[in-house]
Amino acid sequence: MTDSYVSLDLETTGLNPKMDKIIEIGAVKVLHGEVVDTFASFVNPARLLNDKVKKLTGIMDANLVDAPLIEEILPTLLDFVGELPLLGHSILFDYSFIKKAAVNQKKSFEKQGIDTLRIARKYLPDLESRNLGFLCKHFGILHTEHRALGDAEATHALYLELCKLFMSTNERESSIRNERANEMAGVFAPRQLLYQVKKESPITKHQKERLYELICKHKVIIDYDVEHLTKNEASRQTDIILSKYGR
Image (cartoon, rainbow, N blue to C red; front, side):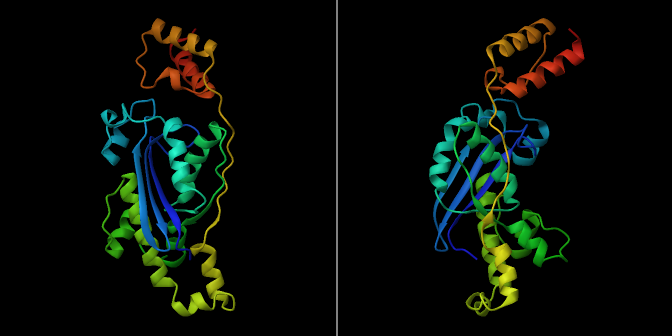
């Protein structure tokens, strides 16, 4: 196990980091087993939320309209994380969204991470669920569900519970000699997170003009901010309008 990390959680508009956007970031900095700082911020996704996301998170468009864009808040988050590994429940999901945002800003974000979901799947196979909410109820952990900071705090508490339950003092001390302890180290210790993503280019002037023209011509009601689309997103939205209304 490790006793220094940043427990990270995001709320997003959906599950696909290539198409969806971050709407809230929560992070808990832990040094030598103690919480020393927290980070929390809404993020303006430059689009309206669907009803499913509103119902799940309780976050409304009004919460996000004056929030910083990811381009504005990301440098502060990266400074907060520093060189520490990440902790998360399905950490690759959160990592993929942050890495995409970092790459788009020409920043490096290569991290190691610990996944409490992976630990739970390995050592608690008989539970009916291993989602964060269920595990928090199982271990009696107070939890503000589907809010970024609440989930990040709960994941930190869950990791401590899992370590106490499955890593005895003797196993820690004999980790080099003991095959079972070495096996545990593979899930309790940080390992390299892998997610490949290419930098996205912003919407071009020509795309912007074309999209505005189509929106105006067909009186399309949009739920996104054209000014903050990427080149690929602009192409996709243009195709959607053309497929519905024709040229």
